[in-house]
Image (cartoon, rainbow, N blue to C red; front, top):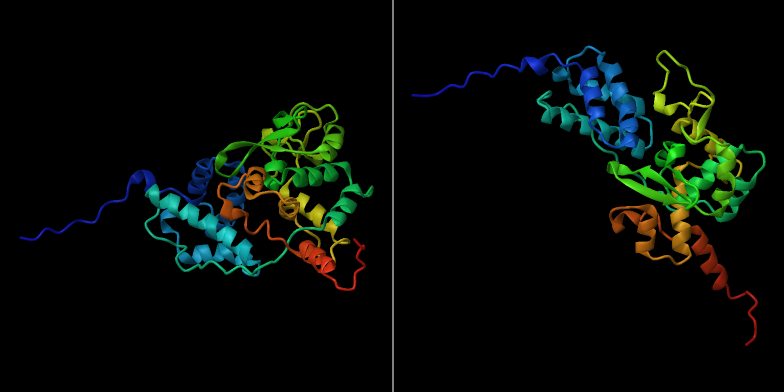
Length: 318
């Protein structure tokens, strides 16, 4: 006698779940606000590719390929970041028994090119920080990112309540949702109170205009300053302003990224002789191995060693 298993019936509670609903549930399950914001960009493209009412159980590799087509010409790191978001969503949907297949199976990660030294020379940073042509908000943001060696998302999501001006530190939500502290030095301490201008609540870094109170572009209440009505400064806008301001100092005239301020801070500390555990405490990396790409002693060290070893240099007699 043989036993034949009948096909199982789909769970009515999950059979009609749309991509829109699944994406909302997935984003709500993420503890870190920065991760949630990054994944939302990718999954918005997926929802647009499928349509808001498409069943999540019917997702196909073609839908994922259409969503990723937005970044087909982007750098490998950008492509991989968005692919990771789709992969994480897929894994979550399979655990929730919303999806039986893997629509991401045909998409491959791209090999990232070796970038070499990404730090910004100190002298150029100082010229950027002290240039009177730049607005106070930008100067505070750039100084704070460099002083703290924090991720840009962590600093842009700060609220005034997170600041401890007396001890020159701020409470941030890091990757994985952990609550940690970042610390700044005197240059930031001197100008940060001017930016706050007496504000005690709301986002530290505000957009230029008042936030819309309704409609598709209306931000969450927590992202609006109760005093000025302005919304939180977005990462794309902050990145654009920094690249535009730094383009004239960049030898390649492309401008630098906000993340390069983190690279620069850690690499400059490494060049000053700080130990790996000290750099780990500053960067808040969980593993020392992760510091490798940040602390490569690059152009400045090479130039100094070359100058010191130059046989034609004048040496003091002993």
